[in-house]
Length: 169
Image 1 (cartoon, rainbow, N blue to C red):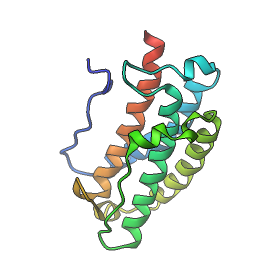
Image 2 (image 1 turned 180 degrees about the horizontal axis):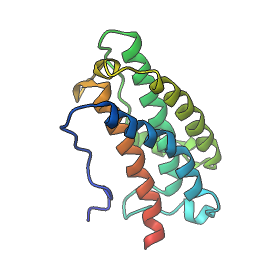
Image 3 (image 1 turned 45 degrees about the vertical axis):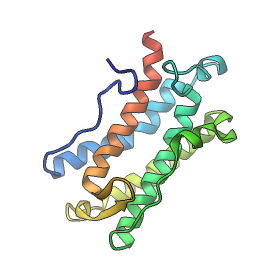
Image 4 (image 1 turned 30 degrees about the vertical axis):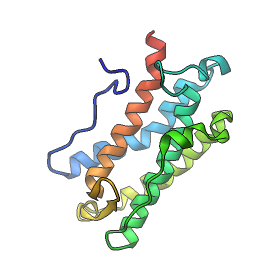
């Protein structure tokens, strides 16, 4: 198993249906409490342990989940309010090295809670047609919100598995 992708890489080639988006929305809704449950009670030593050789520490992973959630939520809002907007990518690795990634995880847990609450509220009012809206990633090209929702659900579960993988070692 590739430790970088403990749940495998994201692939979706099916149809974006009501059932599919409901499943993904529920995963996004559940993520804040799942992350909180696995990190609350960890010591600083545990939080500062990389999940794999050459990987981020658990602390950096939690802060990254907050960064990614904020960026994803904003991408949804941009696609809802602009015609096929060009989004701004960010260098995740460089962000993980910034000093705010050394803060206690409580700061990012609060962000994840708040962003996911707002994001899920937004998603609950989507029609299937809204999931056809697009944005443009400068490197990845045009992406429909329906597929991006699946990626976001996978991304949260992917990093949750990074955190829980240390428990299994």
